[in-house]
Length: 276
Image (cartoon, rainbow, N blue to C red):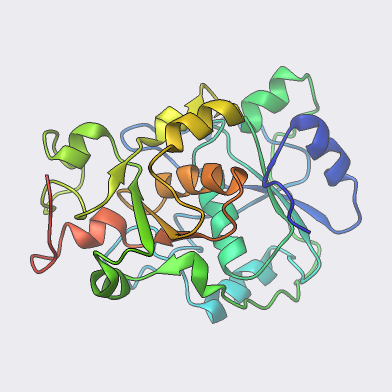
């Protein structure tokens, strides 16, 4: 049975009390904005999912590159994650990097993965308990990744399928970066976008710390996604793409594919086509 990925604080409270539930803080710094780690405020019993560190492949020249299934399994097991775990994922910004963590686990085959809509700010606004330090995993988990390849696409695969009628590409970067009128924050990248892609800046699907309501999301995605096609999402480095991918999933699109290398890979390759 298909379930929503986004949960409210009330729903999170119910899930947290389930036997196999784990709470993961998936916070990373934003571009040009760092999170305050000196005075931690966390959901109770939070484990830290280190997207920038142990959950990225540092052999890759691109940021936030997805781990191999084998390495992902090892890192997930260190957090005590099992095959039957239920994950409640949040970040301390509200909604920023938590959708990336959701997508990572869904891609790697775990079904019961949820994102707290509004993250820590929503939790605090509800007057709920706060911890000041991270928890430690009680024991090694037994999770073994089984990738769902419909959720992932490489640059080579995207080059091969570019122009096909059965795919739809949506770019989560700002309008200026998409059209090549604003500079890229990472050096060495060309300006513009993948030919045939459409633009939906990730901040448009958000209303402050949380997602827009369903009616507004439907309006924003009109003409950009198609349930009859493979919907592919891209951004600068694979993080904000997951924000709009999760929104598309909430609208009923079962398989949301992320181009993991995103513009960091496409824009750096002089052999790929670019539109402005």
